[in-house]
Image (tube, rainbow, N blue to C red; front, side, top):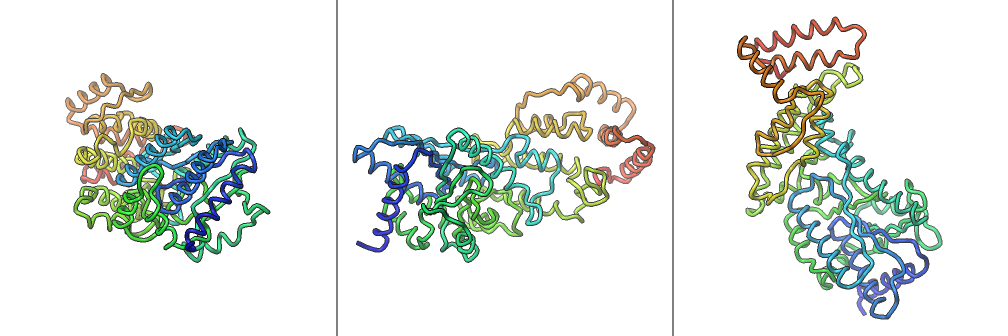
Length: 440
């Protein structure tokens, strides 16, 4: 028996022993990458072996995956197809496996925070995306599962061989007598890493020689061939996870790293060149984040003088660019959207708080063929907007100028002294006269 074959049998025997030792459900985190796929493959093999031996499955197994809403389209399709295959396979084999795709609340999605509230695109010092889009959805699900069942066991695809920092992180863990460690944030949640001692070549050798129970591994290998690096962005509160920005399986809008090597390598393939506009949009987000770009407010939302969120005009510009890109890529996206209807509505809710009474987000969506049904009771309705348009035309006044002045007035609504608004009105009019209105 080869060394790898011996490791496989040892892991499956240990999995079976632990599976039968108690009733707590298992949670297998699944990103679609090689390590999480290997762990899930071994778990399914173990369940099939028990089934063939006549051993009844005594607990549920949850396969948990994250959907941030901004995954690279090729990866989104790949993971979605895998999850569907796993669901169908589990149903046909009568395995008690439940597939869960976790998504952030619409109020905490990437586009709501960046375009709605004006958060600058994430970087290493302000990486707000991981917490909102991955950690919080996973925390809510896992805590509720742990509360319901009193305890859960999370199976992670992490390995000491991945990096020096990963090895050190695993070494720092305090394991109990069964080799499990307590999760630092979720009560009664334990962590088990069944392939932590496997090497990178062993993982690839396993996947190359053992067909997936639910389908095949070759399509995953093609994706790895297209990119670079060996990162695997695990989901669901992995204490040893590295920055998603350093992995290939990440978000197409990721600006945590200075250069998106994963997309750069994807675009070297002729069949993937259609994603170039997405890459250009990502680069635009990074450019606009710069404090000297002129795209951000000169004060924070609390009024403190400092570089603040993206200006409302910047957010409008970016939304229009996003919708335009989506329309241009309609055929390649095959029915998918880059931003959901619910997110567009949420943008409008956030923009109304910044004084956008003309429902700019909804109107931009309609301009690019998105039929978003929404009408705020606080914003101007269609008849009122038409009335204001008429007044502006009759008096040869630019509607955009009126919009800016109204936004400025709205920003002072809670101030006890509102006299400063008049000086800002003058600044807006002066900049408008100079053709610099969107710099306000």
